[in-house]
Image (cartoon, rainbow, N blue to C red; front, side):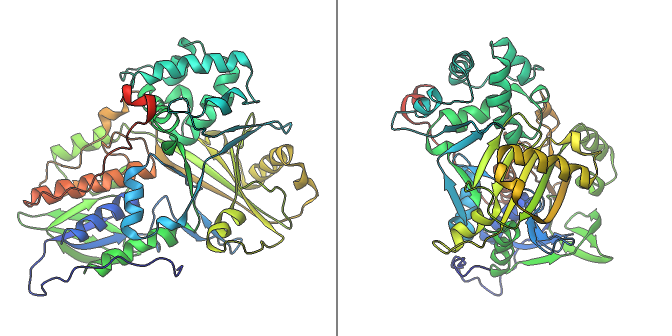
Length: 482
């Protein structure tokens, strides 16, 4: 653990005070956010996670074949992720995020375009860079500008229309779609444009590209994810709670005054339970009743989408870039992990000769049926097109990490299937990025879910605690549009 991570001070509690017991099932971001907020509010939190580490789908572990510590997938955040940033401050790990103002888009022929803010007021702050954006022609840019004007006025109403249809209806060129809209949205929403709702696609661009320059900053974790989110376990324990790893919850029973969980054959008693596992696991733990069947049927309409991370360890540096968006190929993002991780923790220290590259394919449905070697061959071939220096480098190690159920798909009108934290059982609460957060499946959405659940549970016990923080305010001319 980095020595820079210091736990916030804890208020002394009365040792004779009987505290309300809350069991949190699931150590992903929603469960951790709920657990930390409830621990702050004075609840006795016991968090149960079936894996040997915390973070859920935003975690890291030692890859068995390579011996290297890898994240299950590269995660990034934006300046508009207000609740996630609040969570980092709560844990004291905000200095473990590296921030970037510039985003580079690369073509296989080496042509590059960059998006970065200027001194102009929002929503014009990126206009100078966009005018010089060399991977698009003038027709593409004019089409994008027209669509952006439509999005400035407010979020479109949710209908059955998908965003690809909306783009074509608003006169977008094929190149504008493939080199601008798709790279941003498939990465942010983890599904193809013909599968995502207009509302969520519009939200991504309004909140990150248009509202303010601050909102569009990209943050990249500068430490392994489980190292960052492991601090949440320490945070809970420092407030008198308990974290149980390798604790697989098999069932729960609801009583008039308590809830009983069965984990690894042992019973765990609590006054309330927060089910913060993925939705396809949570439905298995609901009590047997007509209400449960209705809720299972509702949640069961949500569909999952995969994401794939492809790792190469080269014997030398193959590019000076730390990250880039890759266009017109299967691979979509490049992150140079050896620079991103060391760049924050060992500022100014020389890098080793080798280079660890992670390539990301969001909505990686086409890769699910492919074998490891087939994926590696494809990814390396495409990577060399963008970075020819890799052709002369030797691959020391490689890995493919498929997250088959990475996120739920933000399909048109999918919000109707996302439940609120409160359930028909007064002692059971739900949490997760798949609940009704108003956000797609992101780290921000997960933390919002955890905070919202903590508020709902606290309210049920007569406590008016508030944990959710406001959205980032619009700046410049965007104040006129909200």
